[in-house]
Image (cartoon, rainbow, N blue to C red; front, side):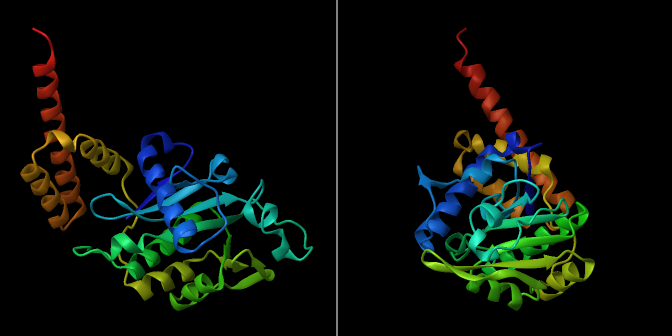
Length: 268
């Protein structure tokens, strides 16, 4: 599922954002060796201060398994302000209907763990579909992505090939970078979905996620058996209604246990 986080709801999902920054540090610094700034195990840059939109992929237990960042090009953005060498002297890209997509990454370590119900490729495709669908519904006509050649090949393999490129491929630190331009159309969305076999709504319900995170924050008050039971009920849900009911049950149980603990702790 894809959770959309923006300036309007980011206060509800600070724990998700924190996990996302930690994932970015593991991927871009530790695995890929990019020259990025990491503090306290979290990768964060000046563009995260500009109220971007984050699309975060979550597994069935609401763990972060992928993410990306989208930013309007009418203000500062990476292609114009960091990777300007790609443009080879061309004017800065500025358009209200063209957004920039960066920091796309997948938690391959978590997804390859025993018991994982999600694959790396399925998660990547769902995130790509989320980007295209969010952009389409938001009136965005094109998305520009600063990628390395490996990511460019992945886009093509997933039937999500860019329809053009800006500037040229240049060396950026330990890797090369290029600016891929993708038109946002119903046809592109259909291609990604057909390639990955995606059906139905892929976007998470905000309230459901918030309730689940609140319940998880009090999981230390629940017995392991009760925790496992709740997790099993959520994982076994076959419809959105069943899943919401299982999540609500977990939240209610956690709240009941927490309230009971508060009463016992209150001086009589």
